[in-house]
Length: 204
Length: 204
Image 1 (cartoon, helix red, strand yellow):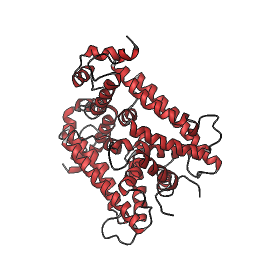
Image 2 (cartoon, helix red, strand yellow):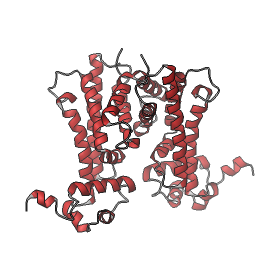
Image 3 (cartoon, rainbow over the protein chains, first blue to last red):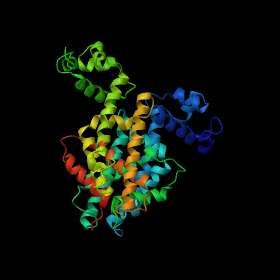
Image 4 (cartoon, chains in turn cyan, red):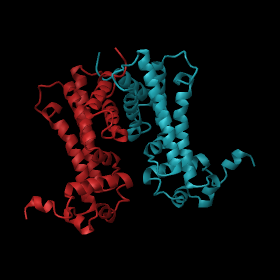
C-alpha cells in the first residue's frame, strides 16, 4: 500500500488532515486537557483505534497541529524577502513589511492552528518545544526591527523588542475576532496591519 | 461589628481583596473550571466556610474580579478627557489618545484581573455578562475612532471597527509578556503604544 493510500485509510472522508482539523477545533473549544481521544472518536464517527492508526497519541496530534502553524510562520521569515541570511538586496524595513503581511496571511489561512498555538502555556514537553520555537521566531522579528532601526528606516525611540511584541500582539489578536468570509479578506487586513504598524492611524 | 471589621474577618492577612487576588491568580494558572473553592482554601490556609463568609460562590469571586477590570476600563472612557458625553472641549483624536494611555495603565495596574477578563469565553452567565460589557466598551472605542476620522484627524482608509480591534489587540497583548518591575514602566509603555498606533514605527 502506498503511503498516500495508508494516510487515507480509515473511514472515508477522514484522512490525517481531516482528523487533525477536527482535533484542533475540539482543543480550541474544550481545551487540550479536557479533550480525550474518545471525544475525538465520537466527533469523527471513528473508533479510537482508527485515530491511533494515524496518530500515536493525543500529544502527537497537538505536536502536528502546532508544527503546522509554526512551520508556516517560520517559512515567512525564511523566504528571501523575509530576511533569510544572504538576502542582502531588500532593506530590513521592506523585509519587515513582507513578514508582517505574511504573518497575517498565515493567521487567516490557519486560524484554528494558530489559535491553538497562541493558547499554549507550556504544560507538556510538546508545548514547551512549541514555546521555544515561538521565542526563536520572536527573536528573529526583534532582530529585523533592530536592523531597520539601524538603517534609519524605523524610529529608534521605541525598544526593538517592545515594538515587535506590540506589533505581533496586534497581528495575533486577529485570531480573537477574524471570521473567514467576513468583510475583510487577508490582503486587506494585511494592508491595514502594515498601515497602522508602520505609518499609524493619524492622517498626514 | 462594623462592615469594615466584617470584611476583615477570617484569618489575619486575608480580607476580601486578599482572597480575590489569590483566587484570580489561581484562575489564571489552572483555569476557572479547574479551580475549586477547596483549592483556594488550601492556598489561602483558610477553611472553605471562611471563603464563603466573603463570597457566596466561586461564580461570585469571578464576577467581582471581572467587574474590577471592566469598571476600570469603563472609567477610562467615562472620564471627561476620555469621551464621556458632554465633554465637547477635547477633540475625538485627543480623547482617543487619552483612552489608549488609560487602558495601558489599567492593564499594567490590574494585570491578573485583565488577563482573566481576556480569557473569558462565555461559558456561564457571569462570563456572558462580562463579554457583553466588553462589547459595549469596544463599540465606544470604535465610535471614538470613527469620530476622529470624521474630524479629519485620523485616516479614513481603515475601517473604524478594524482599527480599534487592532489597536486594542496591541494593548491587550501586553498581558502576555509584561511583568511588573520590568524594563518599561506603564507611562513609557503607554507612550510606545500611542506612538505606534497613531504615528507608526516608520521614521519621518
